[in-house]
Length: 100
Image (cartoon, rainbow, N blue to C red; front, side, top):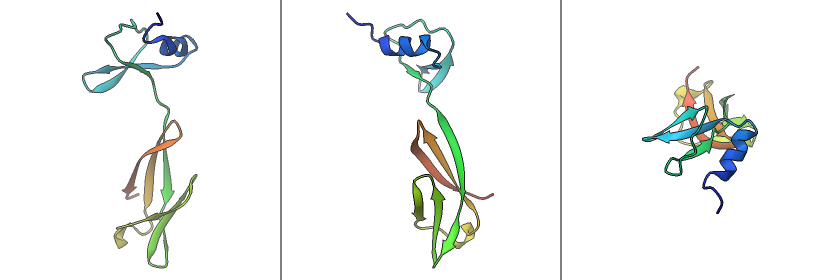
């Protein structure tokens, strides 16, 4: 029978960073015990990118790797500010307006 964490063990052996779930938070672990009652994962690759907001004909938008993105329900105060975009393994997981 295949071990529950077989794929994670292989990834760890190849150098991947592993995390385990402690209560409701992922924590790094250098030497996992691979207990079948514990949840493990490969540490996600999280990147943060910042994009300036520009005004275009009474709307606001920002340019990112996915193209031009229109912002809705944005106050005039954010004109000239920025958008913070969090990517996890190349997928957008969070976008928020920030004052720079």
